[in-house]
Structures are given as structure tokens and as C-alpha cells.
Amino acid sequence: ANMPGPNLEDPGATEARKEEAAAREKANKDLASLPPEDRSKVLFLDIDGVLRPARAGGFDIITDGDAAKNVDTSDFFPSAVKALRHIIERTSAKIVLSSEWRRSDALCNALSELFEKNRVRAWSSKTKSDVELDKKADPVRGFAERRAREITMWLQEHEREVSGWAVLDDINLGIADESRKTSARQIQPHLVQTWPLCGLTMGNAKTAVRILNGEMINKVVVERQVAPVGSGAAAAVAAAGKK
Image (cartoon, rainbow, N blue to C red; front, side, top):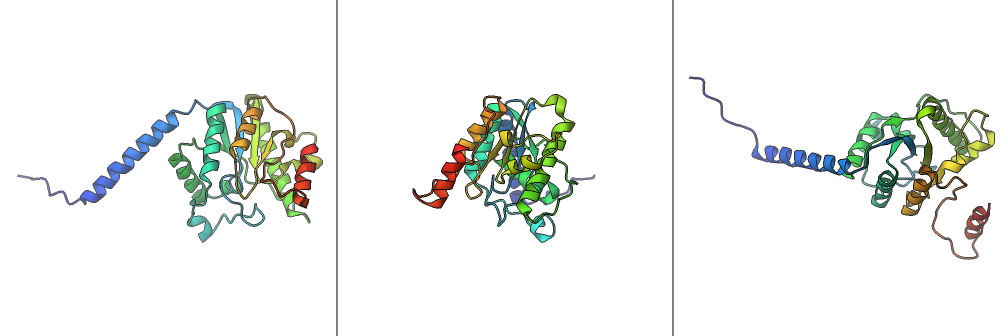
């Protein structure tokens, strides 16, 4: 008679699989607790300087080679990820990934896992990745103008379905408005600029909620830590707030 062979599977491995399955089921329930996605509201999401500290320059993340294969997400700000979930809970907005992270499958996979662990619904779209970077003397301006074009192109392709949109970024993409073409969207009224050393705050998140819900369309000043009174930085922040 053909008798079944002995079960040679490691009991520890079986237990680990059961734990993983239970964790996935819990994550799915947590995601189910989020309101259904409202595709008419769009949140363009940057990563560096928003959910994690920005590298020097804030926009030059390496997206190929070993740096992209061995992705470390341990430096993400828990408070920033929580603030992102707050936006989704209050607006039902869909996330469109506008970060340089979108250019790498390895980075996207790591980001997707982090979102799942933190009960945040993953992005449902990305901005285009084939827009040429206009090399300028000021690399930040060139980068800002390209990202603004990428966002504009996405909005133009989905014009009929979008009623409200906001941009989370640590770079002042509003500088691209100065040289924008007539067909380009004005970024500044929709921009919530984060402070790259602390990322997305709950104050930023509440501003994004107001923009997405159509309650606030005016210039948004970056929220940053208050500098000592009398310092040049404090004067600059005060001046920016008066504009």
C-alpha cells in the first residue's frame, strides 16, 4: 500500500507562516477600516523629506545599483506616516506617487511593505518617469520644474475625474510657477511643503485635508521649527509668512 511519507517540514517554519498569514489578515482588516478611495481627490506624494529625512540636497536619491537593492526603511518618521494616514482617513484621497522612489521597483516594493505594516493604502498611480530634466545652473529649480511638469501631465490626463488635489513635497515646487506655460497647473496653491528634517507633521496633514476638501486654496507656508527670536532665520520665516 502507498503510505504517505513523513512530514519533514520544520514546525518552526509552519508556525512562522501562520504568523505571517495572521499579520496579513490583520493588515487587510486595518486597510478595510479606511474609507473607500475617492478618485476625485488626489494626493501627490513625495517620500524623501516628507516621510523620511532628506539626503543632502533632498532630491538626489540613488535609485539603481546596490543602494536600491538593499532598501532600508528604518529611518521613516512614524509620526509622518501616521499624519499621512490621517489625510487618507479625512479625505479618502487616492495617492499618486511623485517621488523619485517611483523609478525603482525595489524601492517601490519596500515602500509598499511599509505602507501595509502601517495600515496605509498604497498608491494607485504614479507620475510619468520619462520627463527630461532641464539642466540649469540652479539644480533645485530644474528639479522643481520637472516635477511640476510631471504633476501637470498627470492632471491633464485625468482632468475629468479630479475635483481636488494637493502636493506633499519638501522642495518648494511653487518656484516652477514663475516659468510655467499657460497650460501648466499652478502648484503653489496646492502645495504643502514639509520641513525635510522632521517630515510631514499633523499640522501639514490638516492643511492638506483642507486643500483636498476645497476649504483652503491660498499660499501655504512651510511649517518648520521656530528659530530663536532675533535670528536671521526667524526674520526670514516671518517675512515669508507675510507674503
